[in-house]
Figure 1 (cartoon, rainbow, N blue to C red):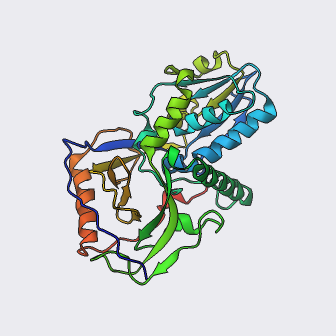
Figure 2: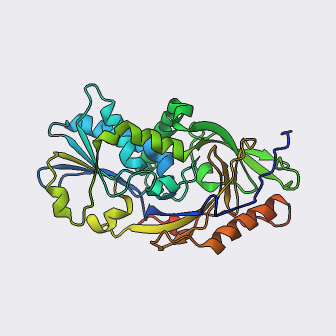
Figure 3: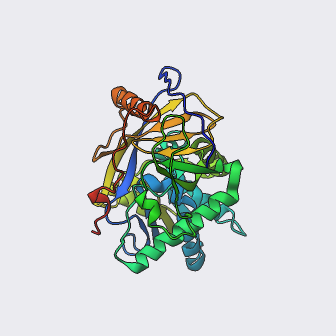
Length: 346
């Protein structure tokens, strides 16, 4: 039997810790991780975007595959990385760790702490990402990314904000249950969740907490000298870059820059409460609770096809009230099912 865990303190003060909103770069059908030698003649273009709510989770795995592609192709003429979110920064970091280091320039409109990645909650969990489930090759490629990513996060460890944490939930999480057991151990059924009033049956998953503020600062500091602030509004501007290899990590920017009509914005919102270092677990339910060293993160509301970062105070406060009632044993969990738009091969 598990020992009881302490409940979170859900007191909030937006004046001290403002709410946050971010727009996830979801791609219907599948994220995009592939080479493209046709769009910009004479250059190798590598696409690495569309990971939805799993950017932090998949980052190192995708970056390793991009690095492997560039190893095979060669990096003479240098590499341009478009975007300084977690996808772009991990690619740049791995390329600079090559022996000898690859000549890299990161072109970005935004840098940390103002990227979409900086608004991520930080649980290692491939949620809100799609892939071609009916295709065995695509499924194995997805699993390969996650194996690499989890191993790399663990290898980087606390210096990059990574720690192992149990995740408690009243409902099985289908996006985890579909993974091989060497990526995520099978869930542990619980007769009672380990909380004072939230005592209904549930499950425990062994996951990771990735403290976003630590990870993003560490990555940015490592490649800051390589970053050039720049906004691309047309493909021709990309084609005119001097580098022979271009890695596209622009996320939602690929919708207009590369005419990718499969890109869909999904707005999420986070509430930052005071840090509560006594909490050593993660929680998923009608919202999430992620205790980080900088704040207790509570979120999120997911709005498909909403492409703005406007913070909705009422929605954020409702998220907190819902979680507070849940831990008080006053509400029941709605089923956590995969949305139909997140499970259709297109």
